Amino acid sequence: MRTLAIGDIHGGLKALSQLLERAQVTEDDKLIFLGDYVDGWSESAQVIERLIALSKTNTCVFIKGNHDVWCEHWLADGRINNVWYMHGGKETLESYNNLSVEQKKLHLNFFEAMPLYYIDDNKRLFLHAGFTSMHGVEKEIHKETFYYDRTLWEMALIMDKRIKRNSELYPNRLKHYSEIYIGHTPTLRYHKYLPMQAINVWNVDTGAAFTGKLSAIDIDTKEVFQSDTLTLLYPHESGRNK
Image (tube, rainbow, N blue to C red; front, side, top):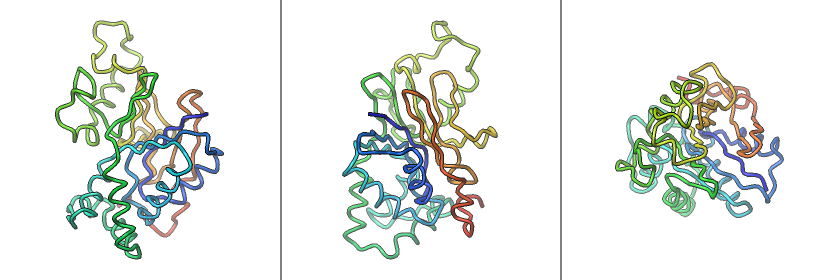
């Protein structure tokens, strides 16, 4: 059985379908999604439908991202965050136009059940963005950190190849986990188009919300699978590239 960590989808159902096909995913594979399933391309509601279907055939973990929190709030009580609306929320709202009240309730339940992080038996941590507590994720005070923080990735980039794990300078928050898998910060910012590694942190968000691809990584072999760039799959849309 493989375990695949999958980056931010942002409403790109075509990319998700293509990625699963190229990775030759079977029911034996465990899938860990790193959050931000909605907002950007035109098929956010349809992505959630596909993920719910996948959960019935595969062992899946669906981490909650910041865009998922915004969509959850809207499904729960009609709240429309202005920042959300300007950063993909408009497209998400439109994707829900033809869904029934019952379907929306199922989606709300799906969002509400999402964990903020997941730790496997090999002390590998999966979360959307980051954490700040030196004692690990269980001691994080502000839960929003799990889906907003960028300091974990920024710190990993600065430290990479400069500080060894046995060094006194190695941050305590990293010592709790053998590896950490995140999304949230597109690797396109660093002109990289594949998942990036810095120290023991892997960033799997390869910019599917913008002009990048949707990526998955086999966490044991580190083999990477990718869709086409989302601008090719949705040539008449702009995604979040505004």
